[in-house]
Structures are given as structure tokens and as C-alpha cells.
Image (cartoon, rainbow, N blue to C red; front, side, top):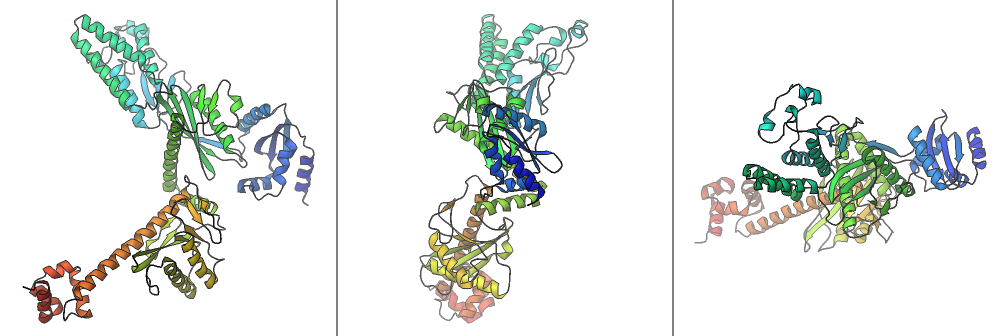
Length: 604
């Protein structure tokens, strides 16, 4: 036994049974993992027991551990707090890592005399008030447009200090003349009056439209009583704009007033946590955080870390009610917060909406990753398919078979080839079923699979990494029998696809295996199945069409196979042969046969 293993065994044996926090160090003395434990000795020793359930990351982590430190605390809650603090301080390599997207749009109320409302993508700690982030720039723009249409705040960048205004340094602009600004730059509007408008804007950004509606209605009535009908009309137009904004805005719930929603989307070695803030039934913030999963992390830990990150960097607090898909591990740390795990109803729909936003964000990230680094994307996808389909190697080369016939007529089959998750169309193959009479899909599958792989073996060509059969257990069994007869059943894994898209069958296993509905492997498998079906149906239609043409032209007396082929090559369809003139037909098959064709289609 090596010196390193002796030292680790001694350190594990010396650990207490009390709760606490443990730290794993590498050969350079750097902390590579921090964890909490109800019992330090039991938890840490579990890493060094051979366990097939250990993830690849845990196995790699264990190989790099050269020393163990521990801190004993009084309770599990104290261990949770200490673990969180140490992870933030040391940022260990094998703990959960958070990667935030800094490009979300925000709306900021500047901290300055006569504050402006602006769009920004930079969240700064400068004393200004930031609202958001917004899930899309179009959502942010609609809010800004509404504010500028309804509330007359200044848009200029002038330094409106009281001294500058008193000196008469500035003059009014076009916005003042068209009624979109009340002229604070020339002292026509007091700070108190302007502050009331800013409070209304603040309410709108928090999702509460009631103060601005009350302000507009009161001013409209007052203007009408004073016979200032043009002013009353302007307030009426702003009220109409408010109603229009509310009808197309981000309001998603009339019953649920204030709450925060968190959803978690797990995908291989990363996860995406989406956060939505609901105020007065409207979405006022939407944000997605990307997490790189740790060596021994659970989804409860990932959700807890994402919530803590959002509280510290985005929202600075939580609503009294937080909707989550499951209870986070650190729920006890959030005082006066009720975590709700809905099963049905409007809260469950809000949770699904949040999860949909996370899926959209993931799709955008995957697309960007594929464009920037296609090799890395392919490697990640192949690893995911290997893990999801329980294969012993990456399925870089996949072949899929599908049968096609119409009540037993013109039976054909297709074989499509995918390399690195993408179709390799030059390697697609069509098969005419030769030995099977009638609609026997099982026998057809046996014939096609045998013809395909007996030829590859004879030519000593590359065998695929995975064979997919479009069909249930019967089709799979037929194909597997052929692989056994050829002696390659251990060289090439094979699976069968059931009617339900997420069900996969394996040889000699009567029960289906269910693929994750949210993972990329299912999308690739569905793409392969659809491509095999499309390719087979196209060939079958061509063959049926050709058979119809042949049967029609074969009825003409004096027209043999050679003439028939010449007609098809030149005219393509029966209708064009029927419409052809005597001269056109004579050029193809000669005058005597041309007259017979004319007489057949025009007996009169």
C-alpha cells in the first residue's frame, strides 16, 4: 500500500462522529473539495469504499486527495453555514460552480438630481436602483416605452444641480414642447413634484400600476373640470396606453400576487436554475444561472446554492412564499420564507413556465457552444448518449433500420447513418426486400440486417458503435438473432425504439428503459428515427409510382421492356406519354410503336 493511502486511512480513522465540515486537499496543499456531514467519520469514509454508484467525478476526486482537514461544529445547520462560507472563500474545483450571464438587460433609476430612467446591461453598486433583470430586450423595451409614454420624466443627460438651474444655465428642448417633460432644467418643475413621478415609475417597475392609474385619472378629471380639454385628452391617451400595456404585459397571474419561483434543469455535468420574481401578478425579473455540478453534489444542493446566489447578487431578498420543484437543502437558512412544492394548479403552471425559460436559455447556450467549439459540443453530446443509452463506448457511428410496405406490396427498407450525432447522407442505403412474401416485418428486418452486416464483414468495413431498430421487442429480437448468427452480438450494441418516443428496449430484457425527456440524447434518437422513416417512405413512394407506371404501359400491345424503359427515361410519367404527339413518340420508340401508343390512349 502506498504512503498516500496509509496517511489517508489514518486520517479517516481519526475523524470524530460529530457533525462538521471536511476539506480535501491535493498534493499542492490546495483545497479541492469542501463538504458537510452529519457524521464526519461515516461521510468521509464513504469516499474510500469501492462503490460502483460513485460518479466519474467522485472517482477522479478521490485519486487526487492527499490530505483531509475537518472542523467540528455544534449542529447540521452550523455545518451548512460553514460549508457555504468556505466554498465562497476558496472556490474549490470539485464543488458546484456558478457561472452567471452578465448580459441581461436591466432598468436603472439613476441616483442624481431629477433621476433618469435608463436601460443598462451593467449592474453597478453606485447607489442607483436597478430593476430586473429582464428575460429579453423586447420585454425591457416595452416597459421603458410605456414609462416614457405615460410618466413625463426627463431623458436628457444634463447635470441638473440646483445651482446650475438657478443660474439659468440650460434651456428647454423638444420634449418639453411636446409635453413629455415638464422642464425641471429651467425650474418649471420642483424636486418634490418630480419625486412623485419617480415614485410612480418605481411602482410600475415593481409591477404595481395602481398609483400611476390613480394619478392619470385624477389629472384627467381635474383638467376636464377646468375646461382644459386638450390636457384632459393627453391624460386620456396615457390611460389608454396603460390599458394597452397591461393587456400585453408580463402579467401571468391574477390570483397569486407576490412570490418568487425557482426551477432547476439538470443536463449532464451542468445545470440551469431559472429565477422569476412575481409582483402584483406581473413578472418583474427573470434570470437564469448556470451551474457546473460538483463531484458529490445533489440537486437539492445545487438549488440551494443558486437561491443563495440570486439573493446575494440579484434580488437581495426573497418573497414570503417561494415556489420550488423540491425542497432545497439549505431551506432552514432562509428565515420567514415558506417554500412551496406545488403538484397542480396555477403555482405548478408558474413552475413549468420557469422551467420552460430555463430550457430556452439552455438551447441558446448549446447553440453558442456548438458555433464556438463544435468539437467540445460533440464530445459532450457523445458522452451524454453513452451514459443515457448505457453503452460501453461513445456512439460516434450509429445506424438505424426501418421497414416500409403498403399491405405487403413493394416491401422496402432503409438504413440511415449518423456520425457524431449528425446525418451522413452519402452513407444512406435503400433495400428492396427479396425473400419475404407478404407483410412480414420481422422476416424483412432479418433479411436486411443480414445483408447489411454480412457484406460489411465480407468487405472488412467498419462496424457501427450502435444499431437502432425502429420497432418494438419483435423487431429488436429479429435483428438481434441475425447479429448472433453473424457472431457480432458482443461487438455491436443494439436497441429497439417503441412507439412511445422515450421507451428503449434492449435484447433479452422485456421491460423498456425510459430516456430523459429533457436530455439531448432523446432529441438525437428521435431525429435518427424520423430520418429513417422519411428516407424509407420516400423510396417506397417512388417504387409504388414506378410500379404503377410500368403496369399501365405494359398493357399497350407491342410495347416491350426496352421500349417501356425508353419511354420512362424520356417522358418520366404516364400522363406525359398520353399527351405526347406522334412525332414526339416516334423519336423515342419509332413510328409503328408510336402509332400503337396513340391508338391505345385515343381509341376513337
